Amino acid sequence: MGPVSTGRIGAVKSFWWSAVPKAIALGMSFDWISDNIPFSLAVAMSAPVPVAVPFACAGAGSGLNGCGLNYYGGGLKVFLARRFGIVAEYRSYRFTTITSTFPTRREKGSAEFFGAGIVWFY
Image 1: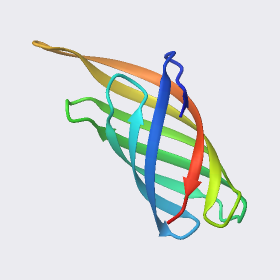
Image 2: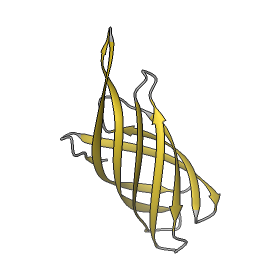
Image 3: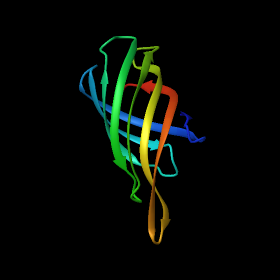
Image 4: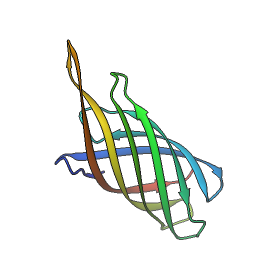
């Protein structure tokens, strides 16, 4: 969770699967940075270091109501134990939202997100 440049508090929940252990991960993410909560698919690349792991990520997705988003960003994961740690992350979003349903009107927007949270490896 963390602040969004639009003045709201944002939340990002990501689930990652390591396609190439400690280097490349594929993931799903729920990104609540606007009025919509879109689901996105993402890819992340990490430096294969043991304790403080820098990473870069990018993704794209859409919500059930037709909203969409894409983003890029990066951050740092710091492991406090073998499978547990903390993460600080920055993401730059571009998104569309639906402002009216009849007639359907869409607005484009952008937002910057900086958040922190926990990391748990299963």
